[in-house]
Structures are given as C-alpha cells and as structure tokens.
Length: 472
Ligand SMILES: O=C(O)C1=C[C@@H](OP(=O)(O)O)[C@@H](O)[C@H](O)C1
Ligand SMILES: C=C(OP(=O)(O)O)C(=O)O
Image (cartoon, rainbow, N blue to C red; front, side, top):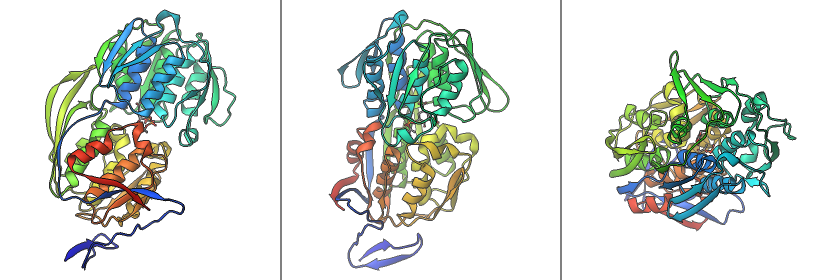
C-alpha cells in the first residue's frame, strides 16, 4: 500500500498504486519536464560561477587597459550576452577553455557604437549595468531583449542617467526596445535609489566611472556589493561609508583608469541555494556545495534557513576575486515557518522562489514582507510563487510586498504543473519541490534555466534527482 497526499496539506489517503495527473493542464502543451519524488539526495557539487560577478568581470575587463583572464566564469546565457555586447562595443572577449575567458579591454580608447542592436535576452543585470556603462561614452546603441525583459522597468536606470546628462531616449515608457545615445560629458551626481537595487546602484556607478566629478550613491539598505569590490580589484578608488542602521554611502571619483586582472570567479550562492534546499527537504538528504561565495549582501537565504531550523555546515576554503569562499553542507531538517526579517530581503532577493519551497515543507506560516521588488523580476515572482505552491496543494497568499505560505509540516501534495513564465528561478524551484513532494511536479519549460545555471539538471541528477521529459 502506498500513502499519497491528496488535496490539502494535512489530508492523506491510501491508494493501491501511485496516481499522477497534472493539476493544471495547459492547452497545446505537448511535453513537460517532471521531477519525481526520490527517497534520497546525496552528493558533492562545485557551485557554478556567480552570475553577478561574471557580468561584472566581462564589463570591467572590457574597459580596462590590458588583458584580463578569468576562470570559473558562468557560461549562462545572460552572461554570454554581456560578453557579446562588450565585444560589439570594441573589447576582445575570447573563450579559451571551459569557464576560462580572456578579455582585452578598450582602455583609454573607450567604447564605440556597435554595428547591430545589442540583444540582452532575459538579462536584467546585463542590460541595466550596460546601460549605465554605455551612457558615459560617445556612442549610439539599440537595446533589445526577450518578452520578459521587454516588460521590465528601465526608467529606474534611465532616470539617474538623465540627471547625469544622458540625452532622452526615444521610448517614453521606459521599456525595451529603445535607443540610447551616450556622451562622454556625463556629470557626477549624488543619487539615492528609491528601490533597494544593486542593478540601479551599479548602473549609476558604471556611468560615474566615465563622468566628471565624484559619483555618490546613497543606499538605505545595502544591496550586493560586487561592483564596489570588483572595481577595487581593477585598481579603482571606491569609498564605502556606513551610515545609520543599514545605510551605506558609496563614492567613486570619475575618469579613473582600470587595469587588467587575473581572477577566479567565486561560486554562486543563488544557484547553491537550490542544491542546499534540495538537501533540506529530502527524506534522506546530504548535500555538500563547494566554493560558494560568502558575502553578507548575498547570504540571506542561508541565514533564514538556519532561523527556520536548518543546520548548515560551513567551512572556509579561501577566497576568489576579493570574496570569501565556503563549502556549505545541508541535510534533512524539520523546518519551522518564520516571518522573514526585512533586513534579510535584499540579501536573498533571488532566493524567494526557493524559500517558498522550503516553507511549504515547514511547520507553520512563513511570511515575506518588504519584498515588492519581486513584482518586477523575470515575471511577477509574488504571483508566480503563489501559483506554483497552490498548483501543488500548498496554501499561499499574495501580499502587495510579499507572500505567505502555510507550511505542510512535511511533504506537500505536489502533482501540479507549474507555469514558469520565462523565469529560471521558478522552473528550478518547482523541480526541487518535486524531488520531495508526495507526487511529481512538472514545469512547462526548462529552456530559461540556461540563463543562470546551465548545469542545473546534471547537478540535480548527480545528487540522485529523477527529472525527465514526458508527454503532457
Ligand atoms: O546586480 C546584480 O547582479 C543583480 C541584482 C539583483 O537585481 P535588483 O538590482 O533588481 O535587485 C538580482 O535580482 C539580480 O539577479 C542580479
Ligand atoms: C532577477 C534575476 O536576474 P536579472 O535581473 O539579471 O534578470 C535573477 O537571476 O533572479
């Protein structure tokens, strides 16, 4: 006799054989990717290169004087597009081996207009950081993106750039596609971004790099600080002053030359979070992720998982590109729902879909507030997360600035089909959910996983996950 969960979290019934019918079939869908529950997940995985650091390495290497070498660069679609864009603007970007890249920067020559539009695909980081960078050079560029990126707000970047002297773009609504005409006559500004956004901060700093005067960004809440750290690595002067509470003021004198570097890219904590979560919810989990960047502006998910009752082993293993590295171990845990402290939100902004998954296994409610930025990611992640959980028998509610999850105190029912909506993190979260739910979980598309974590399926398979394509 096999026990399966049916309907609400806490209602179980016995069946003579497992049954699996998708709860939200989608018309015209021929094939889906399904993650089947497995009794055990075990193994050791080296974390893929960090997406944020990989973008920045290609961008800063592409304007530095000399030739930089990077190892462990993430070869995700988002990052590759940043490399292609830098090449089109005058840098020489060459792959010399797996994860090994050589970038010869334009140095004092600067960037020039590309011959064709720059296509940033699904990448908010690539498009927004590059807008900031390109604004400071005498060039004209057309920017395009996929359906998801073309729906994301770009005025948050264009507004400060206009204050610095960027000519108005032809597009009034702040959405791609549009043309940007840069100028090497930008003036430094002092800017307090209205959103907690590393992309906005970094775009202003990258514009400030070629502007006249000292650019100052005032952050009320600290966001990931890789631009600050990496700029220093390339020889720039960047000052960071702590203010009241979590506030930070970052100052960057303009017109500073950058010099080429040799760097290893640290492992991505946001990708590692999927593997760590899989270990936590597995009935018999023992997952070790090696070489993960340990940076307080990125560690919110791991801090919160510990608040929920996870015991994560962490061992220091050195450093890479100015960041500390750790190995993180996770194993099966009885988790307890929590109110997510708002101070952790920015440092786990990409981890809310996978947080929602572990919250579904926890006992009690998990409440997320102060996370309105989730509404403008690859999709509206508040809605996508709630829909993902509900399709799998978990009670969840949207809030304007977050969501709540009523944990099942064990494996949720599963059995749902999750619409991924061009969002890699929703796809990966749903597939992790399926490894330990009562019934398999399917997703309608996996192609976008390659934007941030091309090895996700092979890494999950090596831990023992059972994820395969099947007719819808
Ligand atoms: O600067 C970066 O590398 C990133 C910043 C974050 O976006 P926001 O700045 O919009 O929060 C994050 O969601 C994104 O995946 C990467
Ligand atoms: C939001 C994300 O990326 P981006 O903004 O670069 O598209 C992400 O990777 O979760």
